[in-house]
Image 1 (tube, helix red, strand yellow):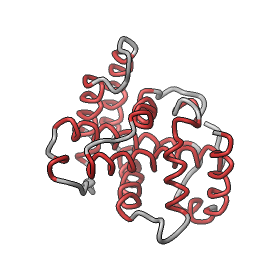
Image 2 (cartoon, rainbow, N blue to C red):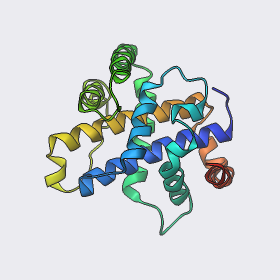
Image 3 (cartoon, rainbow, N blue to C red):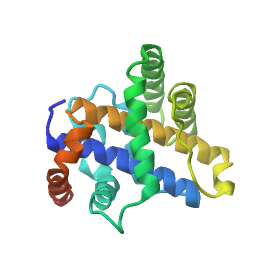
Length: 207
């Protein structure tokens, strides 16, 4: 992947979109299916040569770009929960790359899920989401710190919602990995904050 602010911004939008969708499900029990489909697809596209292609084009991260822009604009637009979820996913991605057995388990599981998804009409099929959720639970969920999702108990105890949330958290880690691949790191995020904001505006116009 080309190391550029543009690609880093797209990847960060992927993280922002995943955590936004997680919060939606936890708080309301529903979410934007189109955005979720793009996020789930990003997990299955492990060998894409283009960052945009990972999300099926800029339209796939429309919500992510919008949310990332809000989080970078400062108070009162910042959502503390989403920032915390995103920061934890980025941290967990760093821990995950030091666990080769987990990486191999995830890659194998994703390849199986991707093959099955080709036979189905949508990646949001329950079978695919369960496989991805189980991958998250059996690998990343074992790393620390564990993400504690806040929301309505009625929604958080629903099995379907739990499955969707775990699958989306895996999508968030995938985007965090993509961000690193494209040259992203904490210092660049802090130093190039304004450039990232400008890139978001440009990408939203193009997308």
